[in-house]
Length: 61
Image (tube, rainbow, N blue to C red):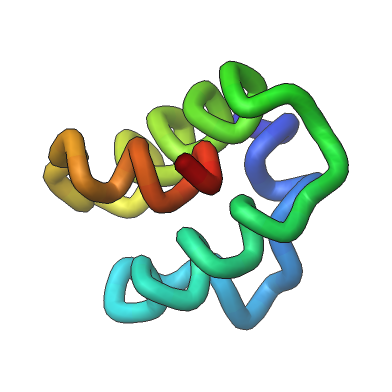
């Protein structure tokens, strides 16, 4: 959990900001699989249901 909290700005630690989280992740200069993992952890922490479209957007595909 601390990995997620350390990566995301505090204002993105809100389940209603999931679209902003996708934009944030897509812009990170990291491997797409790492973006996917961060999204998965964020969704688990926030109680957001993850779907395939969200993963594609976060991976910047």
